[in-house]
Image 1 (cartoon, one colour):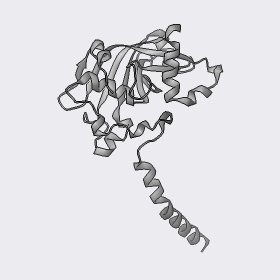
Image 2: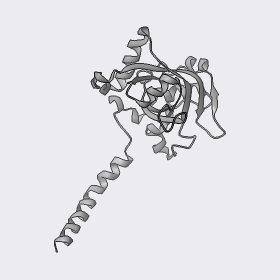
Image 3: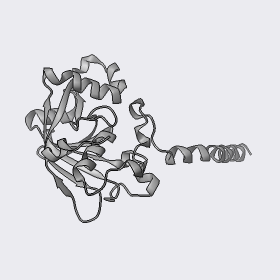
Length: 217
C-alpha cells in the first residue's frame, strides 16, 4: 500500500510540474548579461541577406557567447582541434565595434593552447536568441544565421583595456566578481577571415575591411 501511495504522489507531482517544465524548455532565454539579448532577432531587425558583412556584424553584436576552437596542447589530444564555450562581447547592443573581446584566465585549457599557437576560430549563431526557435529553424540550418571568424587571439593593449573591459562587463556583469586569483586578462580575436551562413548555397566570404566598415542602427 505504501508503495502505491508513493507512486500516486509521484504521478500527481509530475502532473503539476509538467506545465512549468515545458514553459522553461520552450521560453526564450532572457536576461543574458542583464540586457535581455535572448529576445533579439525579430525579423524586422535582421539585416538583408544581400549584405553579408552587415549580417556578420549583427550576429557578432547580438551574441553573448561563442565556441572558440584552438589547437590542443593537452596530453593525449595534442595537435587536435579543441573547442570551448567562451563569453564574448563587441560592445553594447546596437553599438558594437565588431571586435570580439574575451575575459580569459591562464587556468583555462584554451588559454594554454593559445600560448603555444594563437590561431583560433570563433563561431556564433542566432540559435542563441529567440529568432530560430520562433521560426522553427534548426540550429544547423543556414536559415538560423551563424558566422565563423578566424584569426589570432591576442591580449589587448593598455590603450584598448578600458574598451574591452566596458564591452564585456556591460554584457557580462558577473565577471566583475570572478576571483582575482585566477589572473584574468582581456583579449580579443584579431580577425583575418570571415564566413557567413545565412541561406542555402554555401557560406559567403566577407573581408575584415568589409566587416568593420559595415554599420547598423
